[in-house]
Image (cartoon, rainbow over all chains, first blue to last red; front, side):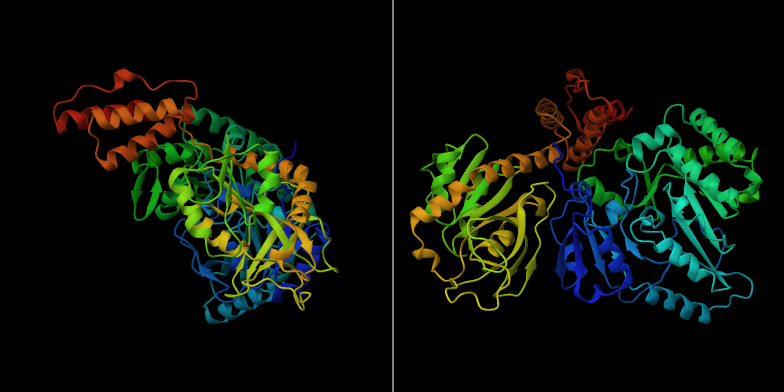
Length: 338
Length: 272
C-alpha cells in the first residue's frame, strides 16, 4: 500500500510567478499535480508547526518570485580557500535529497522545495555585483547550488543548463554547481566551459547507503563525474563530509582507490575534504526534533558557532586523508576545511 | 490517537455508530471514544472549539495525536457535487483574510477542494464564493496548531447544499445520509492517515524510559544531566536496537561528586 502522495503531488504557485517560463515548464512536467494558488511562498514554506522529515515523505513544489537579496557572501563553512569574491545564491530552497548530515533540515522549517522562477533577476544581480568588484585578477565565484542540488532538479526544471548558458556570456564569472546527482547526461551535449565548475560529492558506498540513502548510489555519481571529466568539464570532487567510524580509514582508502581508478586524477581540477560540521543553531534545532540518524548522537565540540568533531581528531584524520590523497594529486589541489 | 471533530449531532451520529464509539460523560460536551479513536462535538461555528479541544488535550496529549474535522459544507453547482467528500487543501478565514494550508502527505485518493470559513451561514446561493464554505475549519486549524503539528490536522468536507439552505435547517436525516454514504471513504482515510503516526514514534521505548526515569531519580540528576542522558540514551538505542539498558549502570550514590562520576560513566558507556 502506498501511504504517501508522490513528490510534487501538489504545486503551490505564487500569483505573480505563474507566467514565468520556469513555472510553465514545471507545471507542464507535473500536469497531473494539483495546483494551489498562494499569495506568497512564505505562507506555505514558513508555516508554523511543520515537520521537515514528515514533509520529506511527500515533498511539494512551491513556485515563487524572489525579491532581493539575490546574492549572499559565502558561508565560512564553505571552502573558500583564500579566493576573494565568493558568493552564493538561492535559485532553489531545499533539496530533492535528504542526507542525514544536511544543514538544510536545521535551516528550514519545511521539507518542501521552493523554486524561484525569476532567474533573470538573479543573473542581473550578479552582473551588478561584478561591476562593483575589482575582478582584474580573480573572477567572481558564485555557488548556485548551495541550499539545494540544482543538477538533481535538471530533469524537472532545467536550471543548471540555463545558468551554464548565462556564464558563457560573462568573462569574469565562475559558477560552482555542487551535486550528488547522476544526471550529467542531461547537460552532456553542452559545450564545456572553463568558468563552470561541476562538483560531485562522493562518499564510500557504506556511507552513501547509511547517510545519503535518498541520493543516487556512489557508483552512479562516480559514473556521472567521470563522464564530465572525460567530456572536458572542470570537475571538483568533494569528499565532504568525511564520516569517522571504526575502520573509517580503510574504507576511505579503498574508496579513493576506486575513485581514481575510474577518474584520471590529473584531469580533476581539485578535491575538497571536510568532516561533518554544522552551524550550532541548525544542529540544536535538528536535535530538538529527535532525529533518527546516529550522526546526531556522537560527541562533538562547539567552537565559534560550529558543531564538529574535536579539533585534534579532526586534524589528525584530515591530515591522514590528505597524505593518502597526495598519492593521486598534488597537495595544492587538495582543499581542506580544518 | 485520532480525534474526529464534528459540529452537528447529525454529523456525529453516523460516525459514532459506524466506529462504535461510546459516550464518555466525564466531559461537559459531547465526547465519544473507543480505543484510540474519539470524537468531540465542537458545536456549530467557532465559539466553543478552543475550550473543548483544550479540555480534551488536558487528558489526551500525545505526540502522535491527529485531529480530523469531518462535516458538511456548502458548495457551488459549478465546482462541486452534492454528496461528494473533499479533502481540504486550503482554508481561508473570511474574517481575517488569513489563509491556512493543511499538509497533504497521505495518498488518500480523495478529491480536493479549498474552503472559506464564514461566521454566518450563506443562504443566498453563494455569490462570488468559488470554493466550499464552512463555519469551523479555520478556527480548528488555528486552535489545533497551538498543540500539534500541521500534518496532524486534516479536514474532510461533504457537500450538503449549494448555499441555498441554512445549515441548521438541513434535515437530520439528510445529513445522516450524506455522512453514511461516505463512511467507507472516511474509514479508509483514517486508516491511511494513521500510518503517519509511525513516523513520530519515539526512539526510546517504555522500558528505556523507565530506566532513564530511575537513573534520574536515584542519581538525583540535574535538569541538564537529565537532558544529556536522554540524548545519549537515544543514540545508544539507535546504535543498539536490541540491547537493554543495564540496571547495574546506576549505582547507589551519596554525594554530588559520586553522582557526577556515575553519570559520566553512564554517558561513556552509552556513547561508546
